[in-house]
Image (tube, rainbow, N blue to C red):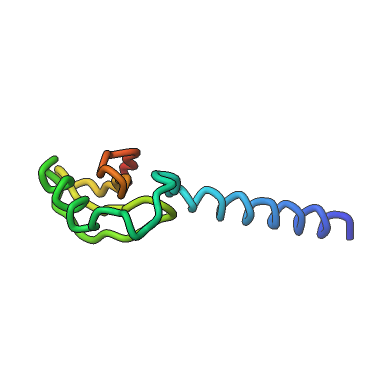
Length: 92
């Protein structure tokens, strides 16, 4: 019975750690109200200017998250909607 309890706890901890690791997005880019944000298409244009083939974009927290491919590798680029500065990049 004790072994089952230890295994159950280990699985619970492992699942919790895995879900935290999956949430790797960068979420804090601006405090500016959404009505004042620049357009997402401008963030996509900045990624294209850097040589990325843009696949899609979305709002993640207070950032624009742009998914792009460059040299065969997928990237997530996080732009501030306030000034369209690149805040963070994650290679997948």
